[in-house]
Length: 323
Image 1 (tube, rainbow, N blue to C red):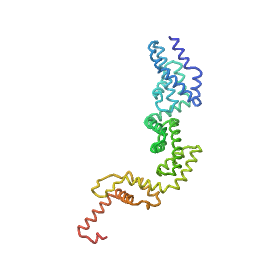
Image 2: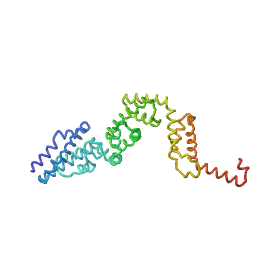
Image 3: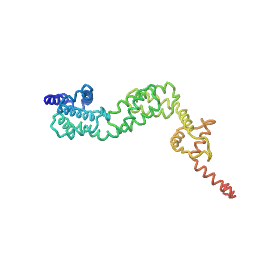
Image 4: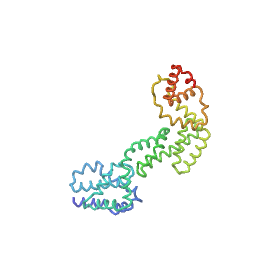
């Protein structure tokens, strides 16, 4: 059985694997595939069920091989926790003090190779932050695969992509970016087909900015076409966005209305008012809603002025009141 353990050690540390480790830049995906296959084989019931029948030295060799596979996977794959690998597996290899030739070769490759060192630096810098956002990334990818893709999903993915890139390792968001690109293409085509009907100016801007992240000709062409469409229907869309925002304000404009915080809407209201060339398109109830919006943002001042005027009137100081 000692010979069997030795054979396993030599078989794993063959020239083909050593070549892949030495040239990790060129063979990174091959390494991930190979390690994934080996880890799956070790964890398979056919293997685990009979492992207790083997002597301890052979089981120890299998455990070392599994640990090395997980360490290589953790560094080579940008996906956090891929196949349950973790930085602890890498640390185990780097701190290995034994004489197992398989482990020592991988350990020395990790330490002496500039490519492996960079991968380890990236892992240490991004692993924790990547884990924090990874569930959201996965949920977003699944939502982007559905058709039709909800507008809110496209907006969420586009607006978070930059911060997610900062939090994750290079290459881990390739799937998300591919799905988002496809969703943006579909959305852009539908927006043109409907002449912008049913879409907000905010969504126009998000789709345009999203398409600008890609360098392919289709994304560039769609972005250019949406820019032209936006210039044509933009004011109508802004007015529609303004009406939607005004619906969020209570119509009650009296002290009895209570104290509601509308501050979160102020930036959006100012942005829309600045971009709208005119609000003359507001008619009927919309005008009343606009007045309510102004009231809620100036509510403390309005009540203070009312109280001051009332005091002046009650004091009989009509001269100051008239001023």
